[in-house]
Length: 431
Image (cartoon, rainbow, N blue to C red; front, side, top):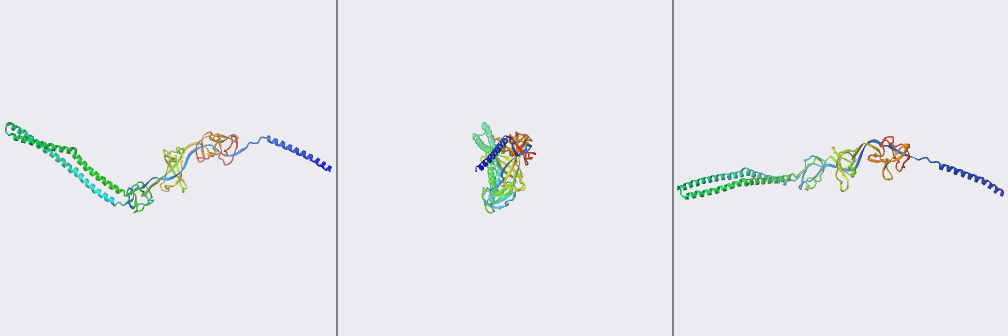
């Protein structure tokens, strides 16, 4: 029993020593590995090369197409519709008769006023050519006649004064001749006054009165003709009839639209965009319009940029004109418009995905330098379009920038450019 315990104890000691020796060796190995430096981590990234290329900024917004001009034609009188000459979809020209309203009473009024006008014209002609000249001539003849009579009586008085002084005639005859002279003088003065009045006032007043009556009759006749013309509904523009709510026989109300005509040969897409974007546009800039249901966009151009902000939305209204000679496009269609804005012929361009923000909020790029080490460079950007951004300062053409994997990367990180990047070509291709 004691021999067995002695044997077990003697075998236990070597195993313990061996275990302690192994543990010491392990600690020595662990200590050596901790002291050796770890190799630097290499981050796989995609990259692109900054390049010079043309770059055009584009502005995209939604809009609704409207005709370049339209007219909701409303009659000026209330009357039943006598006849329509067009249907919806009819192409009409400026001045073309579209409909007529019942106008029998208006035609009668025109005829009545035409008769009054003819009577006044005859009265005016009679006054100008007969009445006034005759009255004027009669007044002139009266002056001449009374003047001749006055001169005769003056000679008689003069002669009788001589005879009376010689005692050849009695004083009664001289008194009689002097009384006749006074009467002749009075008659001459009255005739001359009438003639002078005819020259200065009466003749002119008579002509004005006759002319006034004639013009009044002309005005009433013109008004009657205008009322009659209101029963004829004509198109004020070239275009297409887009609405005709009534039928023949129904009453058209003054001021309510009877027909609507639109000029759809040219359509206008009216956009509302923020002021900074509007400042980048100019009248004449090209545009493309994507219309639902059409495979390819249609071309247009900017024609109007509002000089003032919309007070409700504080945006700027921009008009893009689209030619529509075949009528394939329809007013009221919702479209997406893309307008060309600022253009730089030789812009230093990088992919927009390469731009990251620093901790202070500045824009930067991770530029790959010597030994594939990425360094953070703060840059100033310009215009951007279609996933590409112009770099104004910070880097130069030909430098490689990290496009995928730059977010959160530390300055000085070792990188490895993996396939799929565009580092060996240009930044996103030509615009």
